[in-house]
Length: 317
Length: 317
Image (cartoon, rainbow over all chains, first blue to last red; front, side, top):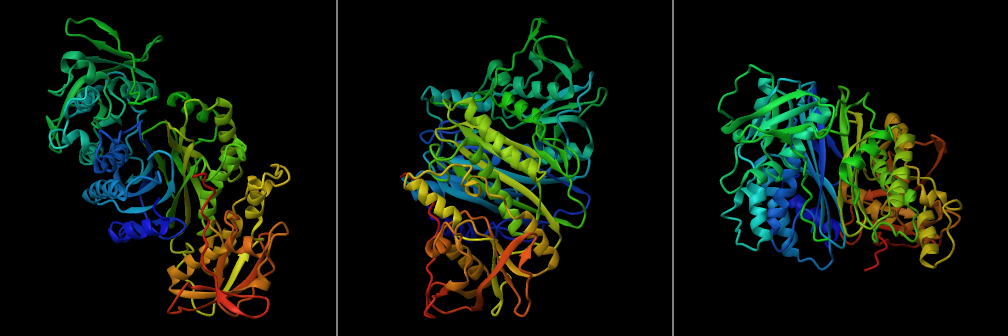
């Protein structure tokens, strides 16, 4: 294992622990110290990434693992309409893991951190049996403007950004042992969180509720329905399916990190927001008394329940 | 593994995710939302606890593991003179782990959280090969008053709270397969972080630098010296050694979670602060050009280098 001091020194030297702006004190004390401007609320999200559950060493290059870990956290900040302020990394590594792997992981992690100007402000290290990374991202949002999951009301239009099913389609290739290079499928190996779209949506005050698509449409829309005490119907023919995918992958595949949000009826959104296509895919309805809250109308007009199939990760066990 | 929804529901029902005060939104959205009062800075610490490294299932009852994980984070907040605001738990559990163990862990964790009025505001869960808990504690402190490691100056007196070596003495018993019940050695199995002492010290503006004793006096004092660009000499005869321990355990044993701090020369502290004994054990000196920054004067008056032996945890590997 990396001795903790040495690890801390190497991260410090990479220069992303720079203090200034909101970060008063980064790595090197008992706690990081942050100063968030008056009138802002603080957002905090944690995401646990474990080898064999969230990634596989034989499929994912180390820099992709580092990138994807941080992208999950940044996507949660985007889903609230927030801006990232600092990130933290708790890393458990097996004693026999190569220094090269750890360096690759950090390179991928820190490259994405730099892209979004998020300093690595602290964390912890330990030896472990399997590679374990817990990511914390701290963000900010003007007080009272965070976009919750709980604000959707009957009649609201349901929108998504981008296209769905892409990550699941790549994952299917990996399972089938088909070639899936990080260059050809870079959007899977290096997903870009929708920070900018989230910020614009929050500033425009369009969404009544928002969530990021990490677990898949069927699951994440059910979360909005549960928290908003409502139901929803999506239209199969309106769902923007990635060209590599199909309807099933678009409905149930996870890790697309697009945004799913609801907008009051009557408001017509532009085709693109911050350069990203947005598509209306259905409506929020009054809570139905029985069964799953999400329904789908197929291309023939038949409405049926869309069970939240969930994103069960790709466990070996 | 616990299905995440079920896990979240069970935590929510335990009632510690209550919103109000600083916590605007807890468990159930993409991020937690916190509102820290104007004029306060935010403290954040993360601590990774892994089975076989930080605890052993055959030695530590589950509620002790949960308690100790959170205590580590609270102790970091105490070391800055801060007050805890919210905590987060990322928990990886093996699929075959009993529900009883998880319940015990949560009971210990949440009991300590309640004691310090810290709501559990979020986290993540996953399956894993070994039990893995990453704890985040968020705290607050009036802007500019956080007690750093870097403020010690030559001539400053070095103080510790409580007694040292106790946890290492209990750990030695556990290694030797001697009996060490959680009732007899409750200060080891359920350590109480020094939040109150830390707060009073910060309010009185006595410390120039502070750290918590998690890794052991020889290591943690070296951290203060490194960050303050100074050296230090401690007096063997002045160190408050726990009656179960000896000098070696008091110098190098970790996990006592007492506070180590420095005070300008000439200031005489009371014998007790917030009911806890404080003891002067040495002096900060100008940085010496060579070797380890920490020296010890033994009972015969001979001064020698005190190598930071560190707290290498008790790994099986």
